[in-house]
Image (cartoon, rainbow, N blue to C red):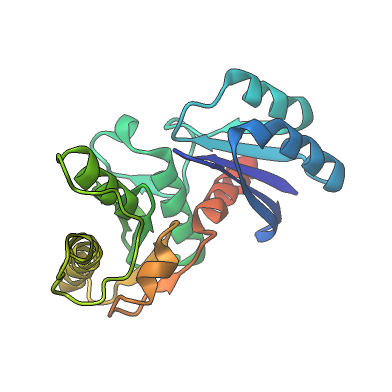
Length: 243
C-alpha cells in the first residue's frame, strides 16, 4: 500500500492507495499532520511507501517524521516521470502539474489530454498522444479573483463565491459575482475551444476544489474528478518503484 501526501497552498491532502485504488482520503491542516500520519500507520499497517508533493513550505521535521515509518519519495523536478517533459523551464514547473500529467498518462494513454485544475490558480496542462508534455497556462482561481478585487481597490467588498442571478449585475455584489463567475467560465470554455481547434479529438479533465461548481456550468463534455492529483502522485510512486 502507498501513502500519498499533497501539500497545497492552504491544506494537506492525503490518500492511501491499494495498487491504483484509493481506499482512504482526507484533507487536513498542517497542525494535524503528524497525528494523521501516525493514525494511518496504525490503521493501515500494510503501507510501505510514501510520496510527498509540496507546492508550499513543508517543515523539514514533517518529512523526517514520515520517513520514520515509510520509504519516502519526495517529488521534485529530478524524479523520473512517465512522460517526456518538453517544458522549456522545467525547474519552474509546479510539481502538482507534473502529477496531473502523470495521471493523464496513466488513465488516458496515447490520447490528447487537457487537464484543468481549478484551485487557488487555474492551471491548464496538455499532453499529446505521444506522451509528451507541452505546457499550458496559469490564471487566477475563483477565490483569488474575489480577493484581488477587494485587496486592490478602495471600496469593493470581499465576497464569497455565489452563482450570479443574471449576466447583468444590478448591484455591486451581483456585478462582482457576474464578472468573476462568467469570466472564469468563458475563459475555460474559450481555451477548450482553442485546443479543440488544434486537437479535435481532445479529452478534457477538470479537477481541483472548484471543479464541481464549474463542471455543471460548462458546455463541453468533460471528465470531472476530485482525486486526479492524488492518483497521479500514486502513479509516479509506482512508476519509480518499478524501475
